[in-house]
Image 1 (cartoon, chains in turn purple, yellow):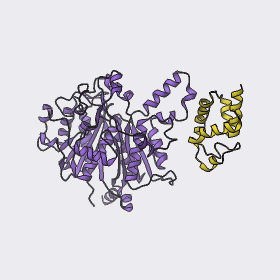
Image 2: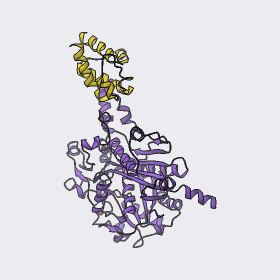
Image 3: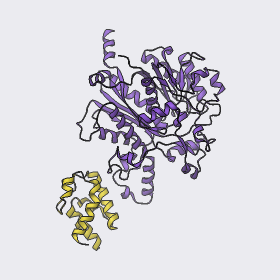
Image 4: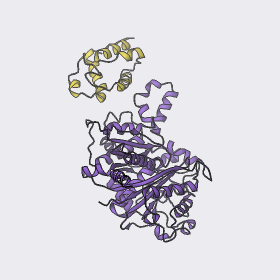
Length: 432
Length: 83
C-alpha cells in the first residue's frame, strides 16, 4: 500500500503550459479575456451562403499573414493550405514556450518529451486542391507537401520536428472527443513513466468542406444567420443546433517531479479521467450517445481520480446546443448524484466559439484549466431562456450568465463524439 | 538566353528552398543542390515544378533525376528550350 502510494506520488501529472487559437481569441491572453467577458467569436461567412449552406455562421480564428510568419518559415508556408496544421502548430508552440521551453530548430533531441495531437481530418483544403489536380491529370504537379499536409498525422509530424521531440509523436482521432482523449492518452503516458512531458491537444480546419456534412445532417443552426453572436445557444430553449467552429488548443503535461525540478509554473494537476464507448448499444448509435456509458465514463473518471462527486466545483460540459443538451445534464445529475441547487456550476464554451469539432476538447480543456489557475467560472452566453427540461434538473444559479470569481478547486471536463465515444477528465488546483 | 541569365533565374527559383546562405551567395555552375545549398531532397520536386513554370517547359522523369546541380539544371533547361 505504501509502495503504491509512493509510485502514485512520483507520477503525479501537472499542466505547465497552455496554448490556444480560438475563434474568440488567438493566444492565451486574448482568449482568457474573451472567456471572462463572454465574448462571442461567431461571425457570418458569405462563403457559406454562396455555397448554399443553411447555416451561414461559424467560428474562425483571426490569423494574419504576419502572424503565420511568427510560427512557420516562408518555406514551410510555400504551397501551405492547411488551417488545422497552422492552428495546431501555433497552439503547440505557444504552449511549449509558455511552459518555459524554447522553440529552436537546432535544439537537441529530447527523448523525454512527446506529443499526442489529434484532428478529425487534416488539411481538407489541401486535400481538395490535390484531388482537383489529380482529376486534371496533373498528379506530378502536387509538389512535395501534399502528403504531409493531408495525412492524418500531419499536425504531429510538423510539431514533432519543430520542437525536436524524441518520445512518442502521434495523432489520435475520435470525432468531438479527440482533444480530451489526447489529453488523457498523454496523461497515461507520463503516469506510467514512459515520458516526462507530453504536449497534448487537437485542431480542426476552418473549412466549409469540414462543415458541409453537418449542414446536410441538419444539426447546425440555421436560424441566426442575421444574428451570428446569438447563434450558439447551449442549454437554451431556443437552441436550434450547433454552430461550427475551428481552431486548436494545446497543453503541456509534465510529471510533477520534472515540473518541480524546473521550477515551472503549474496551472493545475490532472487527477485522472476515463475514456470509454457506449458501443452503439442501449440507445447509442453512430451519432447519438448511450446514456449509460456516458454516466459510467463520468463515474469512472471520479474513481480514477479518487475524489467524491461532492468535491466537484464546476463542470465544463460538451453541451453543443442540439436537442441532446438536456440529456447530457441528466447524465451528469445521475452520474454525480447531485441535482437542483446541489449541482456544481456548469458552462459550455461552445456558446462563445461554436463547436470546434475535433479541436473542441482541447480548446475547452484550456478554458477549464484557466478557470482553476485564475479562480473563476466563465459565463454562458445565449441561455437566458434556459430549456425547461434543464431547469427541472438543476438550479438556474448553477448555470452562470455572468463571470463568477471564487475558489475553484476541482473541474470536471467531458467530451462526447460520433461513434458513441466518451472522455472525462478531472482537473484540480495544484497545492504544494 | 545566356548561361549567366539562366543562372540568375535559377538563383531566384532555388532561393526559397536553400538552407545554406553562404553557399547560395557564392553560387556557381558547380554548386550542388543538396550537398552545397542543403536543399531538402523532398523539395527537389518543387524546384523542378518552379523551373517548369518559369521556362514554360516540361521536365521528364529521367531529366528530373539528373537535376541535382546548377550545371545539370542549366543543361536540361537549355536542351528543353532548344527542343
